[in-house]
Length: 548
Image (cartoon, rainbow, N blue to C red; front, side, top):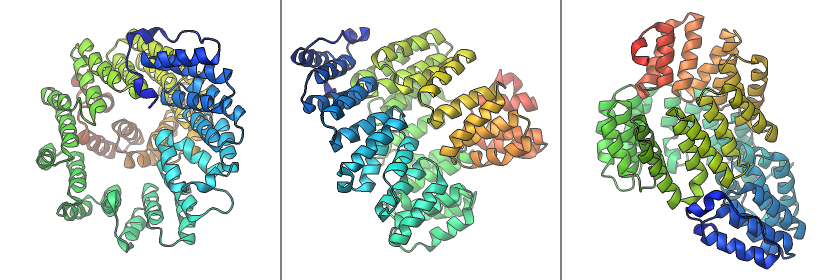
């Protein structure tokens, strides 16, 4: 509610004024900043008031505002002040833990969450709901690690173990997910969700037939997305005919028709049958509650087929929908492709003005699009302006490195990744990104492998990290060792870039037929994937002129 007043305001572009002295003066300045749409100024002035006040309520308000404004520097300082004034407050400890998780500072997060646990507040929480809410607010691997280390304990309940299994599944650590789910089932054999987590984790780890048999043996009726469990497991096992038959049955029931049709459309696209996918999509356009998603899928399909006019029509229909940011980003990308940069950026700026909580995401999107369009100075200026409003924000620091890499300034990108990793050494995304960038440019391959192995130790079933490890091994000349790792990454993602890497490793190993098969599967889904087409042209000579 405090943040709701922070709308876009040109006056805030210069950053907040210096913090005044005195609690009442600082509070007044904070309220004025809120009215003017200056979220950073409001957060810093509320912090000044908290530092001047002995009232823990002021510190609590300062912390909550700073969190809502994504002002993580101010949020950390305000939370520390709150804990200083109320050292045994469960609310203060929990908020401090949330701020630390947002910054991927696991040292602070462990300390704060331990204080929260010891305050007695943990005992009054539903662990499943608590884990869900924490995961919604912060990064999955960070939540999973701290929850597991601090809150599971030596004698956990079935619900605590189920919460751990959920978080481990989201963090793509299937071994831990299976272990926690199995322990939960030993305490409460009626926990169907724990069994479902076991089966999904088995499938990701390649134990497809055991997972399928387990799904067929389930007696309890499934709800929500779990009704598609068997179809999903069949799809993951490449038993597409069986998966289609299961989905056709589910499509015949009104309650599951939409979800089944979405999956069948995905099957059509994987097989390169855009016409069949469009036929399935048409009825969903008139389905209440699914029309927006159907329009988005249709627009994406049109873009993949090269019909940019139709794609743009679809994206524009969604600019004020629940899918507005995705649609506006896609529309902006197409507009910039045709030189309409001002209109493109206006679409995104308009969204940020209406949704101030999304300013960091929108700013990062703008910067990446500008870099991809070849305007690196404008991309970096966008990030400079964003960082002036959101200092030391980890998402902006990460985006700066990726923008520099996109713009061809690899040395600076590596330096930026190194700085960010020094501040957040436990962040697997950073370790993976730095390792991939080094490997992609053939630099410091031994260190690249060490970085990626650190990341995969945290999130061993993450396809992006598996892909990087396989790519590092390939770059080091360990082609045969890279193949099973890249195969797993490809099977668990279907991503075009991973297909390019896996296919190249297959090609190098002499299995050119399988390489072509993998590339074609990926092109069926995304025929316009530039990186994939470039790899195909470089290795085979086919489509070389088109790729240029």
